[in-house]
Amino acid sequence: AESYTIEMGSLGPQWKANPTPFICSIEDPTKQTKFKGIKTYISYRVTPSHIGRPVYRRYKHFDWLYNRLLHKFTVISVPHLPEKQATGRFEEDFIEKRKRRLILWMNHMTSHPVLSQYEGFEHFLMCADDKQWKLGKRRAEKDEMVGAHFMLTLQIPNEHQDLQDVEERVDNFKTFAKKMDDSVMQLTHVASELVRKHLGGFRKEFQRLGNAFQSISQAFTLDPPYKSDALNNAISHTGRT
Image (cartoon, rainbow, N blue to C red; front, side, top):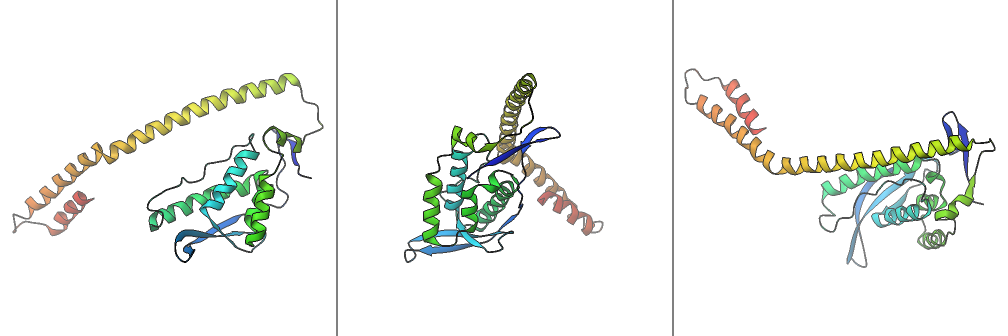
């Protein structure tokens, strides 16, 4: 019964859009406990717009869905979830940062014409009963239409495709994908190196610069008849900044 349609668009083959598009909010991260306080976790309120009924999900539920998507859709790029963290999981800054990243991840899921229609994703968004959750989880994990078998679920266009044109498109895409991959790796490396310098050497240099401004401000206070409080405060503020 599972099928995904590929249609001919103005630029060539493309996924057919989800006939019932929707968005999904992630709000109200709340610390909760189980086993009489032995286990502590953060729960998020997840509300799909086409259902309007919230469900509550932990990070481990997002992680389960992410791994199912990777296993099933080997021909579709699934963005990474925010990384796990062993310490500081309950600090406000970390919780807020993770929530923002989960929202970005969810926006990609709901806007994708194939991922948004996956039965396992619908189960994640709709199931509010623990017993039903386990049943649906097992059903998704027993799915046989994964990897290369996923191709059997595709409904392809009837239009004739010129073999030479198809091969040329594939070769061009392989060249693009390789170049993009290399470029992203280079950008990541350069950005990481810059962050390391700002946390180390650059930070000390800017602190020296700030101290120099503070020193000028202090010097101007030593000439009371002519000192300008507004100017001194501005120089001192620049130093602290």
